[in-house]
Amino acid sequence: MSDQVRARRVAAVVSPMLTALREGTRDHHVVVERRLALPDRIRVRKDLGATLAALLDAWAPLERDLAAADWTGLPVGARLGEAAALLRADLAALGVVDDVDPDRTSGVLLDTTARAVGGRYVLLGSALGGSVIAPVVERRLGLSEGEATGFFRRSGRAPGVDWRDFRQALAGRDWSSAERRDAVEAARQTFEFVGRTAAVRASG
Ligand code: HEM
Image 1 (cartoon, rainbow, N blue to C red):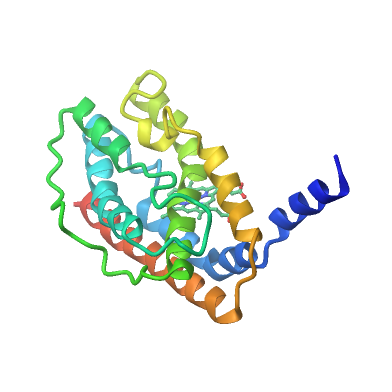
Image 2: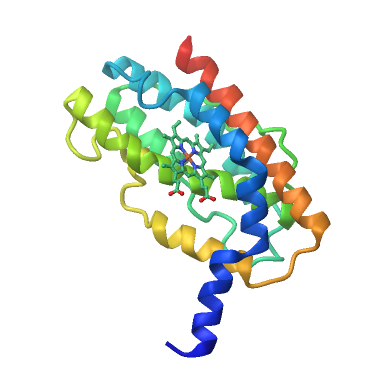
């Protein structure tokens, strides 16, 4: 490995933006884990349907807002790692009707590249948790691998590659402290939106 490549890899790991996002949202992750109570709350197929419907209520508007954000400041696609379609497919597999209003927005301010980075960080990062949740749910409900767990598994996608590309893109440019603050604030609001939205229906 050339020194240049090594330097880039190291930079990707210690990117100040990623560090800010991790440190700035650690508590928010704990809260969302507690509010969503996954995989514990999924005991029967009905629970899985309710949980996925609630997650779609959060994911659909967030992904819509992120796709419309200004990504000119970062070399990643505006739809990097999108997963709402997988939620819809899982719901269809369970026979649950998806009733999300397609025009709904999240209300989280994700308009600038820095703020969009905060939102995307949260959605991309959730795939790391999903890979832990999926096998437990499948075992408990007697589902085969990926059966109604396509969202948790990001079936047919490449979440590891998306995560790596995102991290590298973050490390590939300088961010002002104001931009880092904006990104962290947007990530916190995104966590809160997911926790609020997905907890309500899952427990209802
Ligand atoms: C509720 C069940 C959840 C569990 C059990 C869980 C678990 C995990 C695990 C195991 C990791 C990887 C930690 C590591 O390898 O360093 C992770 C990372 C992450 N999760 Fe979750 N998670 C859950 C829900 C969520 C949700 C709903 C979101 C987003 C709304 C989320 C966002 C993230 C983010 C952004 C990271 C990346 C942290 C980083 O490396 O910077 N998680 N989670």
